[in-house]
Amino acid sequence: GVVLYRGARSGIHNYLVACGLPTPASDLISISDHLLELAFTHPQELADATAALCPLVNRGDEHVVRCDALRYAQHRALRTGVRNGWAATITGARRVSYGRVARELAWRCGVQLARNSTMLRMQLGVALGMAALMGLAFFSVSADAAGFQNKAGAMQITLVLFAFGGVSMLPAVASEWAIVWREWHSGFYPAWLYTVIKLAFDLCVLRLLPSILFGSVFYALMGLRRELDAFFLFQLTLALANVAAGLYCSAIGTALPGAPGAAALLAIVTMLISTTLSGLELNLQTLPSYLAWLPRLSFCSYAFEILLTTELEGTTVLVEIPGAPPVRLGAQVLLDLFGLSSSRIWTDLGALVAFVIGAFCLNCLIVAVKLNRLVTRLEQAVARALGRGRCSRFLRMATRPQRAGVRASAVTAEAEAAANERAATAQAEVAKLKVELREMRVELERLRHLAHHISAAQTQAREEPQGDSAMGDTSRPNPISPPPPSTQRIQ
Image 1 (tube, rainbow, N blue to C red):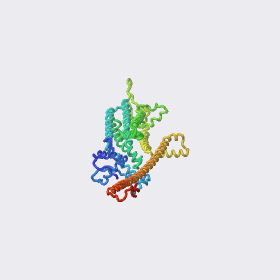
Image 2 (image 1 turned 90 degrees about the horizontal axis):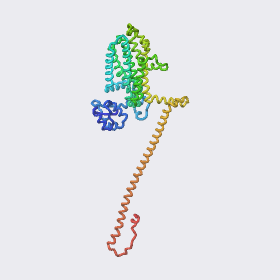
Image 3 (image 1 turned 60 degrees about the vertical axis):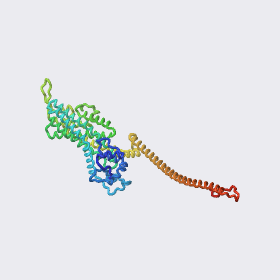
Image 4 (image 1 turned 180 degrees about the horizontal axis):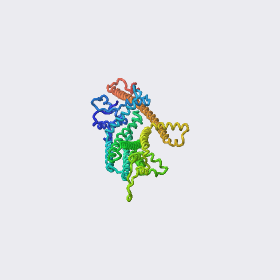
């Protein structure tokens, strides 16, 4: 319930500058996300700057950005069993359901997409433009050898377009990695739930919509089979291939959040290999035996077989050879040259679905590993295996960097403890010296007053004999008399 800001949106920049807090690096960064990030990175500065704003909150006529720390602390306390510190003061806490968390995450994804809709507009614009361009280039293909070449080339170009278009999914999770790290460690939501909601929302909006738009325009202009089941199978295959490409690129971007250049290079190479193994540029039947398994790892090979065999199944191709009468060949003869068969359509479709599910699981696994939950469990399992003597030399070598990191962490913790102890000792010595200095000042002041009294007594003692001689008393001798007792004591 801490107030982060109260006032107009246009005044946030000046407010942050006045408080000495960092401002958004660019206009593309959401100001609400920036304030939430400041709540994690600069909590004390925000608390000091906004302490006077707390009693002025008025939800009726002011725009107030709130950090619902108490609600999430309750969820964290119930999820992790924390009962010490400030979390112990929570009463009446109840667990937040996964449905509620999923709705909140989906709402935030929708708001972010609405604020930064450039990617959506670009995806829709590129899909529509490429569909129109390719539809006009392959307009109403004929049923001859040239038409067969155009159909095969059009299917391959479509897969290449969507495969390399998946590179735009690289920052799907990596762009919010700093916030996800803090929110997950604060117990806001489980890692798998955030990954599924985030990717599902981005895939539905940024991948499925452009795919449906492209397929609808391109299918009509190219003049493919006028059958409803063939059209739906075409759209489904494009959607699955597009989603698979986006998910694999997202997994690469999540695995390398701090190196966008390396992630982009790896994603491009992966998509290039996948499209090359589709079956048009490379005859899969001529691959060496030790590489015959490689096309099974390419989702494009399954998608290409579905698209081309669905279009050419049961048709004939007119082949014209100069100097010979035209010959009509069954399309299956030409498909056999590419190693394609219409009998594997449903198997290929199942393989595409498996690719999508596997890519989803891969993204969840990478996020969980990057958040150190599975890494910690793996370290514990390896430690138990090492303690029982059941771990091989390979596992010992594989876990050596992790164990070195644990030892380094332990050394760092010991060094911090020693430094804290030295700092406490130094503070105690400083406090002791301050007390002694205060006592010395009191003693010095007392001695200063005593010296003043001594000086005054000496002056008075010197003035008394002079006064007696001035009176001219000659009735008694004037020997040198000893100093008075008081003066003697002072001396």
